[in-house]
Length: 211
Image (cartoon, rainbow, N blue to C red; front, side, top):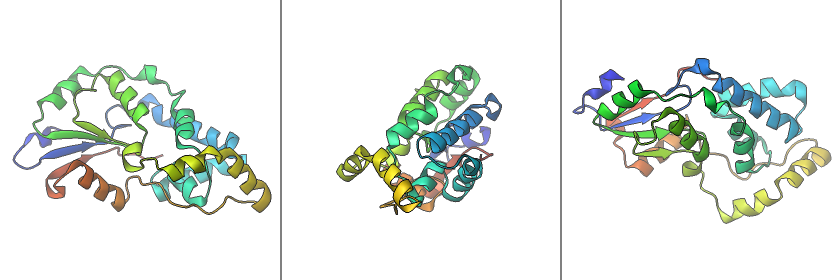
């Protein structure tokens, strides 16, 4: 991160959040994965023996397991998914990091969080770390996937649609549209447009390990 201090070279620093602003060793990642698998098992009625591999394969292929599930045709409420996945995370393990805070505040560039998580999770993590005022803004799930009237109508009957798909067809209905998330090129193009960035003068700092 020290190399970013050369303001003449870069205008903006895009930071991933989870496992980047805090250590992977805290276990937030593992808890999140477990909650995703529980959601797949109990909410989407996916066969238990298939869940672990499916969860990992979708993550690797589509950037998030959630995006992969949507593209496979599973219909579910985004807010419900995020609430179930993040609601029981061990946030108490996150502690204020005054050293990181001072370093971030010393950097002259624009600093923006770019995360696939929802805004509630992002806000809670930054608050726990004491970094909520270190960033110009947060580009998150809702930023890249704003709700539409059609989404509201579709998600109102999400549980019923999922049940019907499983019982009548043996597999979910085809999706109407996918979820925009990193590391897709489309998500990067969207971020550049939303934040008015110069791609050649922007640095992305993100997690090194994937689950």
